[in-house]
Image (tube, rainbow, N blue to C red):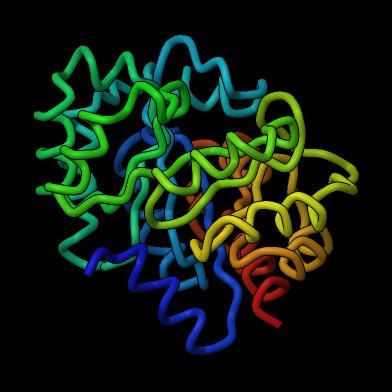
Length: 265
């Protein structure tokens, strides 16, 4: 069974909410990414989302754009990142999702990327700019490789399109809780309950809510409406603050653990 599917089944059995953490791969370098992944596994993270560095990350706010720049500057490439995932798999079975733009798959070769990712130990892909209408071959390749193809739903997505998207997605549905790019927000959206209910009317897939959740209080609130919470920019910001300091991993892990505790209470 795919690790993502398995983890959500386990969470449901334990009546627990899932915690998904996003970081930019290779920020500040791939050695740190590997260390953070192993630390997050111990800190209560259920799924690790790795942003594959790209030069034009249109869905990302400034914090994650800068992380992508640092990842590129550290020499991170898709091939090197796959080697890092393989190294993580020597010590951890934490489910791993790549947050990636289609240009990178196209340049690498879509089938080769999917096959190499699966072989390295990646469990799912969230291709930001690949709509379901253009995804038939991609979905078939993903299914053959045993990986989850994860799709986004936004606050502006109409009902008929929600129905289409959830039929094509696997693993979980990523609900973008606000209009715009990624980033920390002082307040969470007031439409989360309404939209998650609307999505749930069309699917039994777990719903993970992200974009804008930045502290334990917000995470705890949103956990009441979804099967999982996604925190990205707030964690990436911690990595940016502590950079290459010797206490990077314990400092960031401490912050992540505070979020995990809030979500799983």
